[in-house]
Image (cartoon, rainbow, N blue to C red; front, side):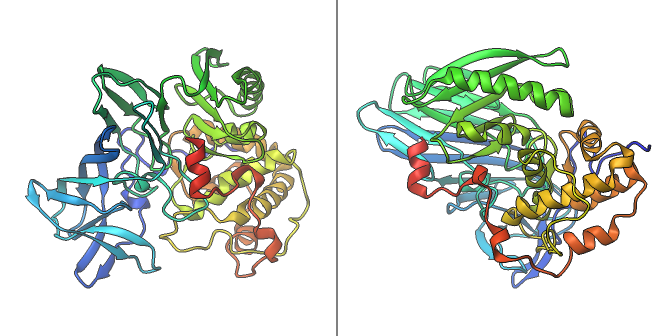
Length: 447
């Protein structure tokens, strides 16, 4: 039995992932080019008197070819400076219509600095009585432009870079706030905090949630990983629930996942319980989730936020793996569908196709059948995760490693079931109950 293809798609120490970016393209203003973020610092101020949220950002990036740099930010940017000089920022459409932000000045190859400010109101609620604020960087992978760009300027999923968040609660001499995060939290003054996030995080990885002090029930404990590390765990809930049951369930799931796929790959784990039946959303070593979806979301800290999809077309892989587990790791001689174009979206696609749950798990059940002489798909996934954790993958990379592991040629299988032109019946497009869609009002209620 063969092992795995040596060398990931990226350079692990530097996370230089620009070769995984979508193609550059021409616009009326000139050539638009994707760039490699080297570091981003966000100074976020919650003004508790004015009830406003402001961000000052400083981004260092590298361009490998000349052109107008691309990034994304949904709120309107202001006061932009490129290498210390004022510059315009406009919203433009990629060739498939996807919206992006473009710097209105071409840069030469090399390292540059972009500074700008913005405000945001997404998932923020100020409390007049408590002189506090509830705010969270909730994300959604099934919807368009629902990652970090909702709040602060960011790159697309193909990029990994260190992030520092300096959070100030203005208008009070001392902040009475709780902060839940998958970064390293330091209190730097009575009303200021600094959070540093790992350099392997992508735009879908960061977890940040702040509430007025004591608003949630919190339980902290230590999980001893099979790798010998002590993993700090925080589970927290609203008034109607007890975090103790989340602790017991999390311990059980830790044991299962580590036995199947190896040691937990994050420095900590944090879980926020939401209402029953609402599903959840994964971040890296963190999740906001209902109790019933905790196992699904914790698996995503291996596949989705342990190894990361490089783009929306690769997003089906982790949802397929999680759904395959949800249905008991079935093995089938054929998928329960005739063909699909599940992985054949635009190269600019940034959301996961909702058919990944049903079609994806059927395809993995079929792959498990085909790989049984090599030890089965779970054996492959364990090695795949251990080899490529904290890196980005594409579906082509996934296929190549499956073939190298098994000695099989899976080209026709992928062409038929993932890259084909046959569309499945509409009922197959229903999303998993583990990732139920939320309205904006419902997301505010989670705060």
